[in-house]
Length: 270
Image (cartoon, rainbow, N blue to C red):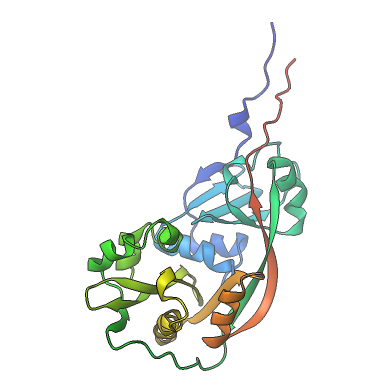
């Protein structure tokens, strides 16, 4: 009789319950700007997924939220295909994981990133008289949804437009008719830092609306005892310029990797 080895599913990361805060600190970076806020946000909000190579005493762990993954642990003895559940995400991991990531996916594209923190006063950002910069409320969910698919990424870390509108961590430039023109929100809420994200409708860019919303959000973050952080691509000049005008200054750079489709690995048979 032909003896078939373990199935491909047996060589995948398994989903696990969220860890307690002490376990989080053992595995993932905490209390810092940048990727450290991803695990903290997932733990605080319940929005995200947790993975491990085994349920007890794992050697490899990952947390995923809104298309971002933080991967930690030991890549030694990782079975081929183990990392397949992370496909389609942007993965931040130590360099020791690169051989395993490269073997797991058909493409692994490096993205150079920049981490900023608020260190200076913002530039003035006057807005038109017919526009009000205010905190989003649950009743604004339809207006957030009306921003369309190009802005869908903005609410992903809060579970969608309803979650973003009701989270209490988003400020928007809103017309008298209730149309949302720009939104700045806490994208990942960490224990010390809050990662800021912003979106402006295309026909209202260069009108200082994004800067006005970011400034209001940063005041709010500071008032609750946290520090604003900013995370953007090295090549996103518009985001870098907005960060500078809002008072953010660069603190470090890093690389995360866009993972393509999983590579199918042959199973051994006997």
